[in-house]
Length: 474
Ligand SMILES: Cc1ncc(COP(=O)(O)O)c(C=O)c1O
Image 1 (cartoon, rainbow, N blue to C red):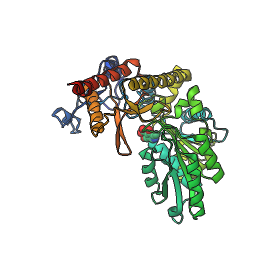
Image 2: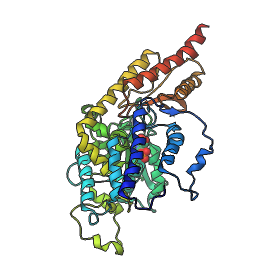
Image 3: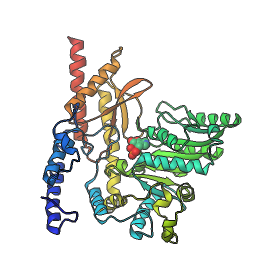
Image 4: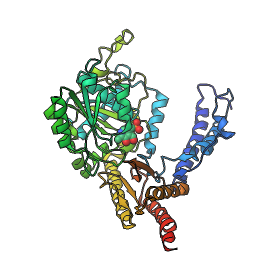
């Protein structure tokens, strides 16, 4: 069947039927499908069907190709068994938002073009800002993810603090080795690679030491350098560490530095009572990054940058162009293009707005509380099995390993990891800290329940019995 570029109503219905069958089958099978399918994945004959060669395919054939060569290969981030990296899951109702946004194709970049779409996105920004504890005058932007949100936040800091080619090599940035690599990437992209980057000491839980931070800033200032930016974590990727935000904000305020908080993973825990305590002080940050595709369980493609004073965001991003003059007099709302480097972009607010309205904020709070409990449960059980934890988890990430007491420790833990990957029902990842290997669990998918945690514990126990205790006693 060859479709014109504008399928008829009947054709749309036929296409949708196949689409719904495919997505329903996907979701119905999800709890029985592996979270990870290990393999080397050399290119097969079937993979050549991805290539654009002028051939026409039926939608059914394409969906079958998806099943065979996408859905059944590698990691399945939609699975509740996804306990690696930073999961999220991808709530179904967000997909409805994406569908509507793509069909209607509203241009949510400028208020003039789509006042309704921009107003909806700004309502989301307003909710996030108030939830974080910002007062009047803040602003923000919905981005494609945390990396881009970090980039915008750090660029805004650069402009606000007057860093330019003449002073860049004297300018000093403070963070910890826990910061996500997107921070370092962003610094390079925005021309701050030549700044002096100080990795501040951390406590035993990988949290920034605020006293060490203050001491370092003072000595740099005395040496004639220009300390201007602190980058703190509210849920580091490696271990989920939350820096002491209030104490760090005190230092930033006293020494007049910009405080950027990367809360891409941890930010939405502020919806919980526990998270509100943990993240106390975040409202004092000049810029904050959050990822709804993590803490609000949206499908990939949703980050947020929030800035305490919207004028800084505006100063860093706003540009004039003759061909945009018709839009100039529309100031009832901020337009996303004024607050971000992006121009044309999808109407990405809808995928967040629909779930928040349809399920209510409480549903997200409850799911996040459940993840906090599951991580505690896992930690309790794994310690009972003789494993050591590398941190006292602040949120829902923990690192752990079995200490064999000899030089085989890392190799042994790698073996456990490959057993988990070969089994595939659940997936965890690993990390390296101070040149040592750690197993790492991140509980954040809204689909993760006790069942998945028990499967993981079962595989680990079996590996321990097979490769450690049975060897020891033989
Ligand atoms: C703390 C933190 N910051 C930034 C990022 C980058 O976000 P994204 O993958 O959405 O670009 C991540 C990703 O896991 C993260 O955990």
